[in-house]
Length: 486
Figure 1 (cartoon, one colour):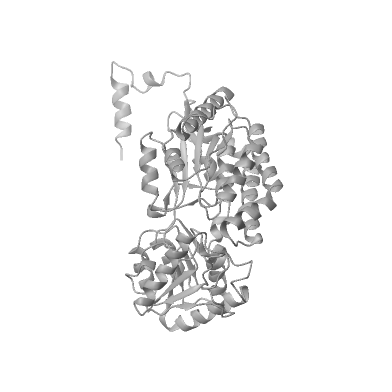
Figure 2 (cartoon, rainbow, N blue to C red; figure 1 turned 60 degrees about the horizontal axis):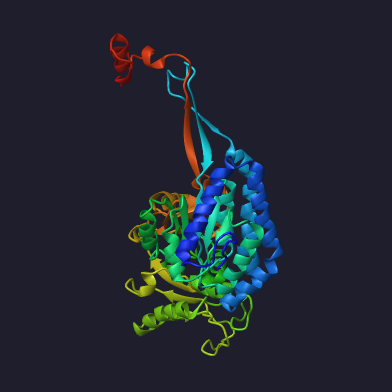
């Protein structure tokens, strides 16, 4: 745990966190207007510390996962964080400008003027998950700091080595009055979620979200919830199967499928099932000729999730369900030394009541359902809880339009998976069980700001002119008559 120097070490963790919150809020109020220069400086310090510690970050993440590719950690955690911060740094002066808004007739003609100014909220809490333990702290932090706020962070206890390193990075880059971090287990997370923040961002499991909401509600803390769900992939008859499965399996095997946006199941034309399976096997074999001792294939994060995923497969096999591991080198996964790897595994035509069809997989398993008519795909998706993402592969514009307009998800990607979340100016967020609110780019700046409405009245006595000033009379009746017109 990173305890600010200004605070005594005695007392329980909740007392220390409350003291830090008050310290940050007092310093924020004392600072007054947060200049663009101050915001840029805070962002630049984030970039500097990410660059300085990038090798240590790779080592820490790999230690927590037991095996996670250096390239994946650099691309998805370090570089992704820097990209988000650089984007905010580049655009924040423009984001900070007041927005002129039209003033209603006839007040506009009489000199009334309307605008919106974005004001920092104050202190924002960030609860981060384990799957991308660095980027899911620094990416939202870019929006929090660009908006002029202070931040308190709770990293995941599932990645202890990385969390310890992040504590070191934050302590080096920021005064605890600006950004503070509190490491620890569920008891720390529970206390953290109950703090009286001005806003809180939680990224994690849908099952935990109600507890976060309940804790936040005690202080009426507004929330952004980034959750997950079972993101569907529809493969059209018009799709290039080999190209499509190459992209799908890249997304499915990245971080061993431990991504909230990972493809969760496929919907494919029934006559294309064999072709889809063959293309998936080919794609995985090309990327990973072997898996067990391949440092480029990620391990499952811990024993709990390893057993959960194997439990899905065991249930399917007990039910006589066909299970197809993609194991190019024919390796024995029961004989692992220090890792918890599971090969990419296809489950064709799964029964709807299997656990894997009810729960978010968050691993390298991929059920494949078939359909006869395209309409079945939309009906099926709409019968499930709304997912964080939905994916369509094909060249049929009519199908694509129906897919986009008639299904509801946090985001959509056409002819690829996951890539929409890498676009900084596309809001990233869910809907329903997939989440609440959004961030990234300007949307993140808005999420972590208060859009203050400001109206400037003209020098004319508008109330008297419009008959709003008692005693009411003819001018009042004229105003009422004008407003009641159709």
